[in-house]
Length: 247
Ligand SMILES: NC(=O)c1ccc[n+]([C@@H]2O[C@H](COP(=O)([O-])OP(=O)(O)OC[C@H]3O[C@@H](n4cnc5c(N)ncnc54)[C@H](O)[C@@H]3O)[C@@H](O)[C@H]2O)c1
Image 1 (cartoon, rainbow, N blue to C red):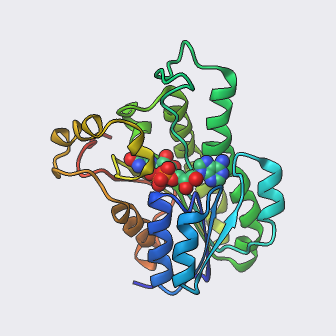
Image 2 (cartoon, rainbow, N blue to C red):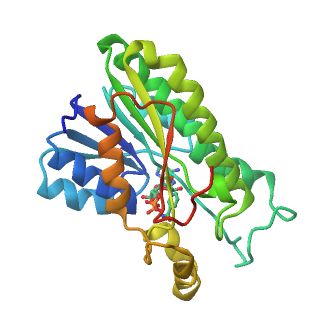
């Protein structure tokens, strides 16, 4: 399996899934930049691995993205950042009928608009080189409504599937492939904000008999960027241990 390109940019790169993708692409010989608001966990990986760098950036801010990332020449872009707020400041579940516009907009800015802005930043370089790979991390919540997720999160992930299809058609003639991954329930900091027993209560519904781990997603991201996936663009790969097997 050959992976083209040189520079990989992973947004939300210091979280559970992002960090594992960074590790795997670095093992594959790529130069990796992990973009995140909190870079501590990525900094530990960067210390041990000369191929990995961390860049601190608030991906919910258009001006931060444009300023901080303007000189990053990524030919592989993994749009991975995501937030899934389930509780308000008082500890109550976020419900559609109590959700504020600010809460809604915060999720859209991070989970959707950052994907557009980072893509827009990277595309001219990819198109000029006639080579680019973009992987958008969506969610099985886009297919099912999710397990514990609130409506803003599920909506944002469904938007990413449309973004992936439309963009894939637009940039295919320029040698740029665009695909999405819909992770199922993956053990990471994101899923640790619900009690362990709630998180594990879903396991009997997973035919594979276990929660996913970040490596399950990283492996598929690497595959999608490889020549083994050369004829794949505009698709979404379900990586969920059989939790969702619908159309
Ligand atoms: N874990 C799961 O079960 C699961 C399931 C389906 C989809 N996903 C998706 O996978 C992706 C990665 O999730 P994860 O499980 O690794 O989550 P995570 O919470 O471990 O990592 C997310 C990272 O994004 C960073 N981040 C959040 N807001 C930011 C901002 N405004 N600017 C910069 N960085 C910011 C966080 O600091 C964190 O490092 C997300 O898009 C998520 O929606 C996860």
